[in-house]
Image (cartoon, rainbow, N blue to C red; front, side, top):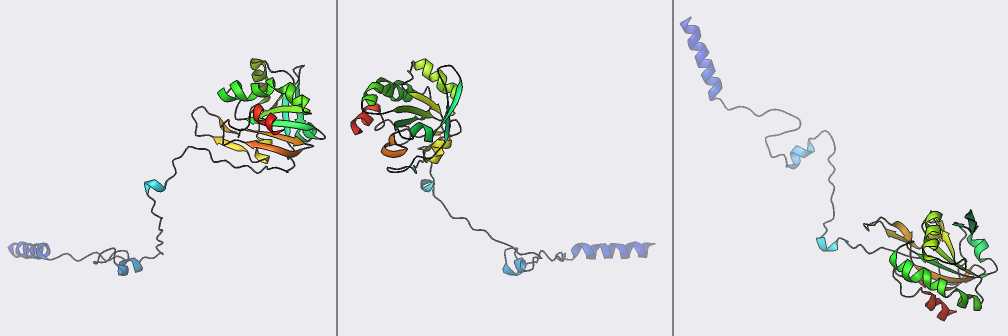
Length: 231
């Protein structure tokens, strides 16, 4: 019994004093894992992806809407269907073609009904000058906005706009998109989303003769006075 205990103690001492051998694995080696030899033994290809370095100065934090227009002088206005409430409070639709065919028409657009510049200056300006436009041979004056017909009706009533100016709803932005005048205001806290760039145009038989485009919602060249001077 004593001999057996002595042998066991000797065996245990030998095991504790020996240096452990590294684990044998196809995924690891005694060398650094970053070595090419270790990576080359992986059982699957290793794809390294590189990303371009960008400084903070190169990032675009601007909230200025990026806008562009495809409509220009001499172009035929694309057809689209707009809606409005008539004097009998009936919902009607009208196409751009019917609105402008064989007519002299002024179409002006605003970013939004009930917004300050649109309510205080743009729409009232054309309403006040309607008789002067008529004297110059203009058959139709229409205000277009990416708002629904109910909002346009309420806006007309709120500002007491006469029937000399049609307030037309481009609710889905069909016409606005067709002429390339979308204005993305999604980053603004008031929840405007995608609206129309401000503009005023004069068309004869649907062909653009005068085009006053604004930078976004600015109000510098698209007033009623600007249009009267251009006619």
